Image (cartoon, rainbow, N blue to C red):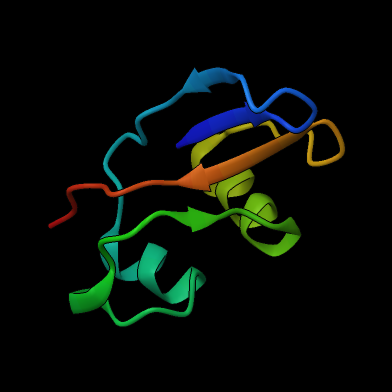
Amino acid sequence: MTELDKATEELLSEVQLENPDGAELAQLFNEPLNNFVNSYPIGTKEAEALAIRYGLKFDLIKNNYFLGRCHVD
């Protein structure tokens, strides 16, 4: 997952999800698992689910977040 400053588009952080569940993530982003290979913007719904599942924190007012290509089994 990448975090970018909305004002400057500066990369603030990159986080690798621990033990990602590909099927769960694909469903969250409304994408078939076999097509789940792009970068996906994280909105409110996705941020809430990722915060619960992976313990991540989001500031959607200041920053943009994307779930990038990830290797999932």
